[in-house]
Length: 306
Ligand code: NAP
Ligand code: GLV
Image (cartoon, rainbow, N blue to C red; front, side, top):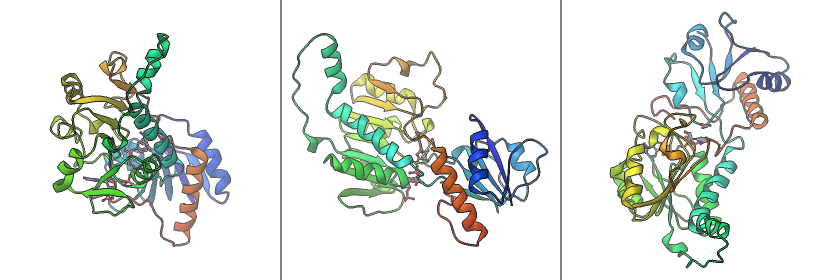
């Protein structure tokens, strides 16, 4: 069995080492133009030339949860695309989102500023019941985030494409329930995949439906958010702030207004990193399962785009 590795923006050698030791019977190699055609490939944002040369490849294992970059390529219809299925990402995402929600809810930024000025200040605590958190996307990551937020007793809403039932989460589904979901979410967390249906979903019309003083956390993709609309709603005071981990252009350009905006917290696409050991082990197990004719989880539906 042949396994090709084709990664942009990261070094392939550690993956080569991990996969070679997990699959000693396979021939694992780092792709370069002219490499032999593989049975399976482990990829991140590969060039079109890779796909074109690897005609006959059976499976593309994406080393991330989001497959938007991959689905922009021309892919043969029979090629299976497999996304990372948690592999240590959901706990990181839960940490990140809970940290952002709690930091905002408890006004820790304001306390930090006061302390720096030597002020022993008091702020009236917010009512937790006024701080419902709405999670857009109740998949692998969104469901874990919703569950973790409940441990802090925030009221939690969730929105997905198909109707869901999650314990103690007020679940909304589809476009027909989007407005009701937004109207009841004081904090909005975006964990949707980037698809034709969800691109620019964090726009002025939708974010204006959030309650006054709402807070936005975007941890999915930069192209979900219309940046000027966020700035306008922060300026008008309708939104109180935002935590953004993902951007339309990454790295965020040095002169971008988000870097220094007083109501925006920026992090460098770090909310849930791919953990190589967990991810390589998951991929190796799936390759073994496929080899033995067993079904695997994490298959991407090319029609819905996630
Ligand atoms: P997932 O398991 O595929 O879940 C996607 C969820 O979104 C599902 O609940 C799905 O609804 C819902 N959804 C999709 N299209 C929708 C629509 N048009 N309307 C309403 N709901 C819709 O994805 P995941 O693993 O949780 O990851 C989500 C995204 O997080 C990834 O695609 C990626 O972009 C992003 N991500 C970011 C980082 C980071 O470090 N910032 C790390 C990992 C992932 P159904 O349940 O009804 O299908
Ligand atoms: C990271 O953004 C991922 O999609 O895994």
